[in-house]
Amino acid sequence: MSRKTPHPSRPTPHEPVPVLTLDGPSGSGKGTVGLRLASRLGWHFLDSGALYRLLALRAAQSGTSIKDTAGLSRLAETMDIAFEPQPEASLRILLDGQEVGEAIRTEDNGRRASLVAALPEVRRALLKKQHSLRQPPGLVADGRDMGTIVFPDAILKIYLTASTEIRAERRYKQLMEKGFDVNLRRLLDEIRERDARDTERGVSPLKPARDAWILDTSTLSISEVADRIYGRLQQKWPQAGRPKKGPDKREV
Ligand code: DC
Image (cartoon, rainbow, N blue to C red; front, side, top):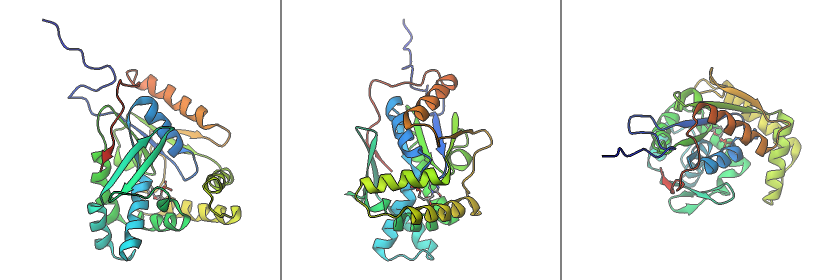
């Protein structure tokens, strides 16, 4: 009788689902790099920043104050969110069935997201949603505390960084391409302000995990960064690779 061999890229039932974490400040390239890696590996993708942005949007829509932590936690637990991976390494984000990818990316909503992300009750309420995305064959998780708090047992932890000026320029180009009216000086100030809030907050501050690989992307292209991380992942997890079928749409 022949023994059934498990799929090479799928963990056996006793192995935890592998997670690759990508943490770092905004503009370090983690979103684009993470989506590319998830698509190459056929793994799920968690954009945890989008969860905070979605909550900020939902709060604004429902008139929930940033000071109402109980109300925000309730919203966090009941939001109906779906992430749909698209071709060309992009992600369709739905809130209660409505596409909100553009609405959550405005600077104003980003500022509100940074405020709600500083609340311990909100972080606790969103933890379950983040863990629910850990599904076979694997997960690429992008955020600020993926390697330190949410997935401390990740098989590979990456911390991406880049100079503030380079990050502001990247964000400037991104927003201009999308037709937003932006001012580079103002963007630079906002990035500095958000970095300070994200790194100095008491709960889950932005910082590299002790066992993270720190990669400065200031002079690297997206492809170079993705290739380096992919190479390192294969050293740690040789069975990592594209399965026959990629992950389906995830409801969280
Ligand atoms: O990555 P982003 O710019 O979309 O994140 C939006 C905000 O959410 C940003 O201020 C940092 C915060 N955030 C967080 O506190 N923890 C995460 N895991 C992801 C994002």
